[in-house]
Image 1 (cartoon, rainbow, N blue to C red):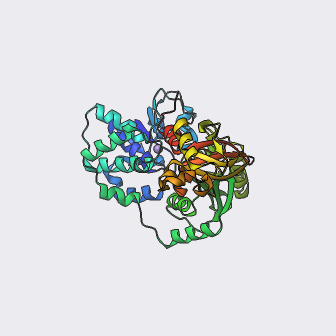
Image 2: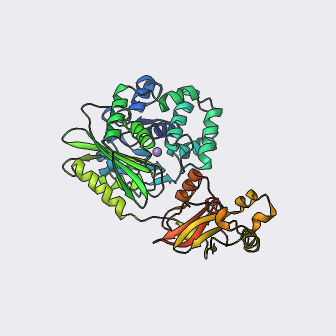
Image 3: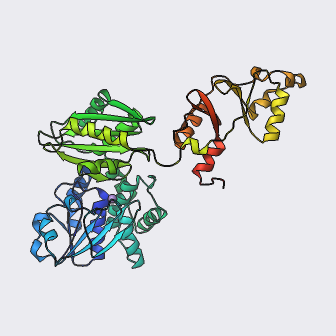
Length: 433
Ligand SMILES: [Mn+2]
């Protein structure tokens, strides 16, 4: 007997991958863990009979000859598969998109960093020129959209988009998909969101804001993950962690991040959980960590992590052209032309008074104005940036203030300047040699 299974707290990518695998391996049975996410459970309650899906206690583990694991590479995330783990005569196949180095050693595997596991299975379906019915296409599309944030998360690959096209060609229903992807909020979810907003503890690390919250649940509430996503957006934090106390025995930590620097999956891995850079969760037994300890440990992990990737210091130009406030405008114009620069700072290295940019030169209407000092035309209250920040933060500041130049300041001294062009060049991978 061939069995396909996936991780506990099954999400749609996991369910979609199980269903896809049962089609790729004829005569296999899909085993879905007892604990599934609420939108998955809602889907299964109406669609279960359409697929070959059973619970872990409904199979005879001794009869299994091949175990096909999808969407996780860790044994402890599977439901009741310990018996199979101990056997040496079971062939193990693995399909996964988590590069977390789990402990499932497969006889055959397809493991790649891609938006959704189901994309890998769709690749094989396309290769076999399989035609899917609209029902299967729809559930596969829900899985693909959920794990890629409707193809918008940075982890999304071109192949994920191509897989979505294939599913739409096979009749995937976007109305049904959007119903399960965006379930309506009810009063209980609104109350939780409201309570979280009132109790947020904010910490900052390397100029990133992280919201942390501990919340007691007096009953089982569906859609906690969706509430946490919305919570992050509402409090406008770079990342959030919410620790839900289930009862005295355990708590569940759910994290969401909007910046690469704070990798939720790798942080929650410390607690036996998992996920992606943008989203993840962990259920933690109180014998290991009390909720307060979970909070302190998360903060500690974040504080110890280092900023990866480029910083403003890598992109900025220097030396910077700084002139005295009395410099005539005609000289400013000449300097911009000669040095081929669009912005000149006014003041001195340790006292920034203003900035004049090429655009400001258009304000001069009369010839005699070119004799006026730069301080008459410069912009004051110049926004500056610190060299250890990341390019995305400079971009945000530029958009917010509608400016194209940011002097880089370290310990009250100007050490460089970063321009809109520098940022664009960085983001589009056009770094000069
Ligand atoms: Mn997945």
